[in-house]
Length: 199
Image (cartoon, rainbow, N blue to C red; front, side):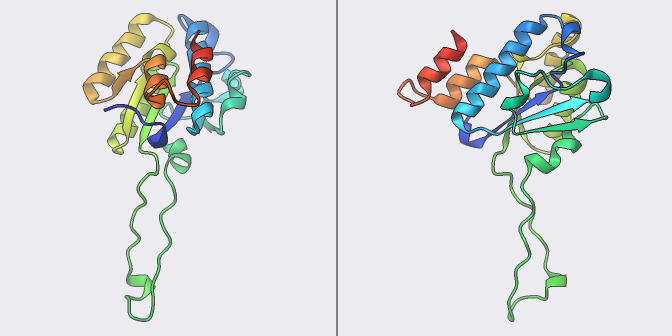
């Protein structure tokens, strides 16, 4: 399945000031997160970010934060619950008329997400990213993890997370895969803007 910009939401997990210096290859990981957010901005894809215990770990990277539609604070390692309000639209209001069941007997139909594919990237891959992705899979989201925009303090921990995520059903992708799939063709009006981000 190719990624579709109109069906995607980008979730950036814990790219925080005091955490990033400890991440193996942190500058490259952060650069790819920025590219993803910039591509999402070019193509109208919503961008959400999380911060784990921001009083201790600091805020989102200052170059990344302005690219986010909303930053959600959390104390749990998984961001699934904290993100619920921004990822899923509210349930539709109950409707009725004189010939229908009384309101108290009507059942609200759960809303289908308008954008059902979540493109995730973040730190640490084996803790917050992993737990978030696994919980979102359980909630029946389509989850793609951008491997070159994820990091941990050790490569071994990061790679173990990728093995587990792939086994659980996440699609593993790269920053360039996401951008080119969102665009689909070189005649897309935003293609040159994307090329400028990756060169």
